[in-house]
Amino acid sequence: MEYIVTIIILVGLFVILAASFDLIIGYCGLISIAHPIFYAIGAYTSAMLAKEAGVPVPLAMLIGAGAALVSSILVALPSLRVSGDYLLIASIGFQLGLIELAKHFHEIGGAGGLTNIPPFLIREVGREAYAVLVVVIAALTVWFVRWMATGPYGRMMSALRDDELAFSMLGRNAIWVKVSVFGIGSAIAGLAGGLYAHYFRFIEPDQFGLLASSAVLTMVVVGGMRTTWGPVVGAIVLQLLPQAITFFGLPPSVLGPLQGIMFTGLVLVFMFMRPQGLVAASDLWRGREGGARHD
Amino acid sequence: MTDVLRIRDLNKSFGGIVVADEVNLDLHAGRVLGLIGPNGAGKTSLFNLVTGVVKPDTGSITLDGQSIDNLPIYQRARLGLARTWQNLRLFPSLSVLDNVMLGPRDYPGEKLTSLIFDARGVARRQAEEQDRAHAILKRTGLAGVAQSRVQDIAYGQQKLVGVARALMNDARCLLLDEPMAGVEGQAYGAIQRVVRDIAESGVAVCVVEHNVAFVRDLCDEGVFMFAGKVLARGTVGELIADPRLTELYFGT
Ligand SMILES: Nc1ncnc2c1ncn2[C@@H]1O[C@H](COP(=O)(O)OP(=O)(O)OP(=O)(O)O)[C@@H](O)[C@H]1O
Ligand SMILES: [Mg+2]
Picture 1 (spheres, rainbow over the protein chains, first blue to last red):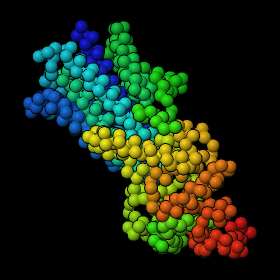
Picture 2 (picture 1 turned 45 degrees about the vertical axis):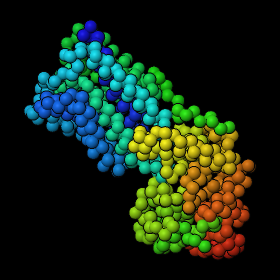
Picture 3 (picture 1 turned 90 degrees about the horizontal axis):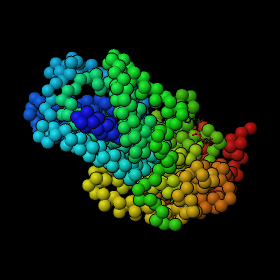
Picture 4 (picture 1 turned 60 degrees about the vertical axis):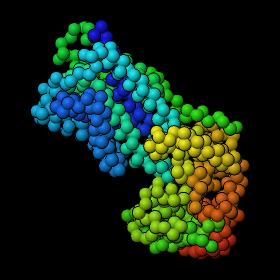
């Protein structure tokens, strides 16, 4: 039972990560794969605040999300002011640099990881309650991304993806839209980080590296970018698949690389065979108001 | 006659190519100015300089008396500067209506705070803008294709979408880059009528166009550009009657 609850929590966390990443890379077209570093910032901030400063866990989680928001804006603002492609380089640099830095910081556990993170809900109410919390937040995230994408902001993101110059010429502030979306998506990832930390109670720098990046990217690509259910389907499929291969009892030294190869392979297969993913998005934007009011 | 746009001593070159050479030009409220000149004269470049797409080497531009030299593109647009593009630049993932809906100077919901804390106000203003968009689509003869994707309509209609999108700005100054190129049939008359109407409502309009008949029928005045220089200003009739200019225009 504990195993199943843990799987549900992991799937829920990846739904949150994939849906918020889809907002960034799918809807807004911002090329970055450093999403897990904001997950890490949320996780570490929340864990340290609760563990060392005795901050109540829910508050610590919110501050963690805030830290992810602020740091993502600091990364995005200078690189997006230059031009699109710098974001990819700047954010990967930030991700890998911060991971290396964390490994040398003994105060936050160093390379060995941060242990004994205060738990939340598990003792008082039980693991199932935590799973419910995560699933509710995952559902809210999916709803929120859909709300953003089908409203006035969604129309702006579509136009911005199509033609930034024409978009700006209409009086729209392209940089601000991009930074806002990057910040919001990253803040949600930060919240997921807090949720991870106070359930598993152990985090280490390496789990937020490129393997995690490729996992989240694969979920969005395989599930289907710019769709409501794509990231959900992707997160479920890609969380259950690696779980399935753990049943073969392979040693960890084989398992890790095998999962990495699997993610990369899936991305390649989907790029060529079904670029739209399992759930295909319409190539024409439709707002939630419908729009057929007049005729 | 009020000067809406005032260009002073504007210079710009790309490497050795001079696209603006001491350009001085005023656009007046309620008037249509035709900008003519051969390919490569610097007409589109002038629009790019005015809108902030390209930064000038020297010179200054004011809109309604306010300097816009240091403003980014989007802020110039918000002061009432709108344009169309020679190569359209429509948004293919949006319907005709949604292309146009992006055009208001102050787009409801662009501020995240208003989107979250004043959702009702945003929805109300979106509905107002949608009514305005429908009115503009009707005026430009696009009412029937409002829900179509822009790739699916005729080229002339696509040009009109560009004009309609710019009209949403409720601009003080409207720059049209070759609105007639590739356009025939119904759209021809529609564009002419719409541009005339816009000017009559007090907007300063500048049209770049190779279709001389169109420019002559439409414009109050014309300027002739060559190699980044404004060589002459007068009625379009005078300009095209000048053998010196026609020689530059057609080359010899
Ligand atoms: N960004 C740029 N970089 C380098 N050269 C440029 C740039 N923009 C324009 N040019 C050059 O400047 C010259 C003027 O171009 P421009 O597009 O302004 O001409 P035009 O008068 O609009 O011509 P047409 O009637 O063909 O549209 C051309 O030789 C063009 O190649
Ligand atoms: Mg041109």
